[in-house]
Length: 199
Length: 105
Image 1 (cartoon, rainbow over the protein chains, first blue to last red):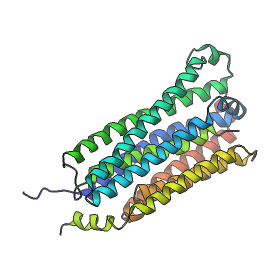
Image 2 (image 1 turned 135 degrees about the vertical axis):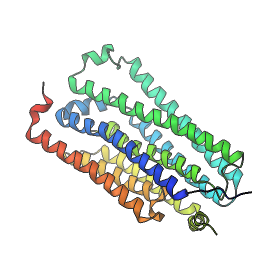
Image 3 (image 1 turned 180 degrees about the horizontal axis):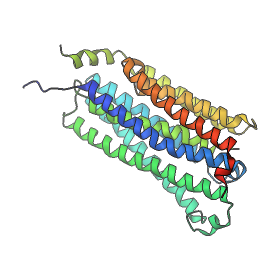
Image 4 (image 1 turned 90 degrees about the horizontal axis):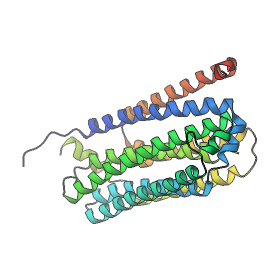
């Protein structure tokens, strides 16, 4: 087989540059959150009490665990253990599904209680509470989209490992997909205390 | 041996154990930040929560994202990105503090 030119350093660098744009995308929203919370500190506390801390904590642990299994999957592949690598990656994908199911029930409960744009409960709230829930839906929603995208990318990686297109000496795609997943994890690490743990 | 092969050999130095330890640390910090939220730390609540979140992110970036073992160039990039973001936040808060009318209709 002929030697195909590969630049793992370059592709990782490219991935990181993309992650910086993601950081600034979410950064803009965090900035908006900071400004509105600064303007309506009391309303944010009242609104935050409507979130379920237990659900948020479970989701945090689910995401942290899914990040761990991505890394373990890479180590397993480096050690030529393809089945173990697929097993770890499978856990990551299942964790992603579990996270989204939790989110579905969380959002569902809020919407059921009339907290949605033009909803009856939201109409009774103060301006600050309304801003809180606007940010809550926008930021956890954008994060949720990132979880879905991350799962699609990792599913591709799963298939490519299965087909031996990603192997123990050619796994930079797996690493880059992992970097994306970890970024999604980091964003949640900040979203969780800022939305669930305000007192 | 080509360049990337050498790189991969270096990667294999890290085993499963260290990552499981980092994960244990992350879960512990999560439980700590949740229990701290129950206490009334007055003005320090946000600061502690953000401090713990920053420590957790540093652990994810260094170990899970492998930055601890990458070339200095990546570290400089990340530092520049974080500093730019902090500058934007600080400048915004100067504005919010000294011109609060920008938030009122």
